[in-house]
Length: 105
Length: 261
Image 1 (cartoon, rainbow over the protein chains, first blue to last red):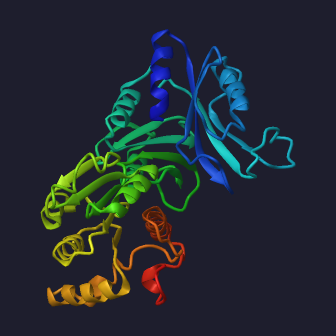
Image 2 (cartoon, each protein chain N blue to C red; image 1 turned 30 degrees about the vertical axis):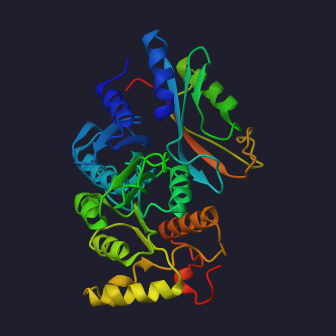
Image 3 (spheres, rainbow over the protein chains, first blue to last red; image 1 turned 45 degrees about the vertical axis):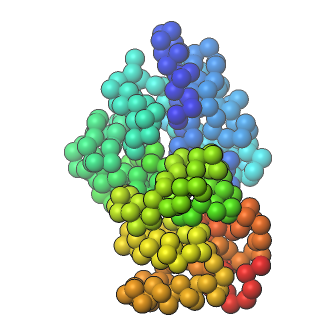
C-alpha cells in the first residue's frame, strides 16, 4: 500500500471520502498478489492498482457506489467466466477477489 | 476520519517496520481491524478476545513467512471452521541477501537481488574491492571478515534470507559458511567448480562441521541452466533461491554431476 499513502493523505486533508480496494485472494494466474491496493476518492481519482489495468475501471465504479452509500463494504470478484456476474474479466484468465471498504478506520 | 490504526499502519509501512493488518472480510463485524506488530502487541479488535489472540498468533507467523492471505475461523477463533474470513495483510521486512566476496559475479548478483526486492549487503575483507563505487546497487558494502559480520547480523537472518559465498578463497569462504550454518538463513550457497567444492568440503569437515550440516550448502551454486557469464550465473543463483523458497523441483547444480557450463 505504501505507494498510495501520499495521494490518500492529500485527499483526506481536503476532507474527501476515500474507498480502498485490496486484493485478498487470487485463483489461477493473477497480475498482483494479495495485499495490492488501490484507493479511490469521491471524485473518482485513483491511486495504486489491483491488476494489470484489467479491472481498475470497474473498481472505480464500485468504489464510488460505496462512497455514495449505494453498496456496502465487502468482497467483489472479477474473473474470466461465462457467468453474468463477471462482466469485467482478466486477460490472464484468473479470478481476483477484492475487499472494498471506506477508509474510515 | 481515520483512526490510530490507520496512522500506525501507514507510519510502520513508511518506516519499513514490519506490520500485519487483519481485516474481517466475511462475517459479523465486517471491516473490523486488528493491527499486529512483530513483537505481538496489537491495536484494535476483530470482535472477540479469543479470536484476536488466534489471529495475532497467525499474523506473527505470517509476518515471518512474508505472506498475505485470507484465513478462516470459527466465531471465537476456532481452527477448521468457516464462520469468519479474515484477510491478514503482511508487510514484512525485505528479505536480506548477503553476498560474501566483492568479485565480478557479485555485481550481477547484487543487481538481480535488488530486482527481486532483497536488501543487499556485499561483504569482503579487502577494502580495495569492497567499495561503494564498485557496488552502487548494494544497500550496504561492508569491509570486514565474514565471521565478524555474521556474528553481528546472524541472529537476524531467517527463512526468507539468503547468503551467497562467491569468493573461491578458502580463507574467506570457510569462515563465511561456518558462520552461516548456525543461523536460520533459508538459502546458503557457495560458488566454485566441482573440484573447488570437494576441497572446500574437506576443509569444512576438518574444521569440525558435520556432513549433515553441509547438505544445506548449495554448491556448486545455482540451477543447472548452463549459465556462463556473471549475469547468467546470477540468474541461476536467484532462480535457485526462488525454487528453494517455493519448494519446486528445479535442477540444482549441487544435485547434478555433469559440467557446470
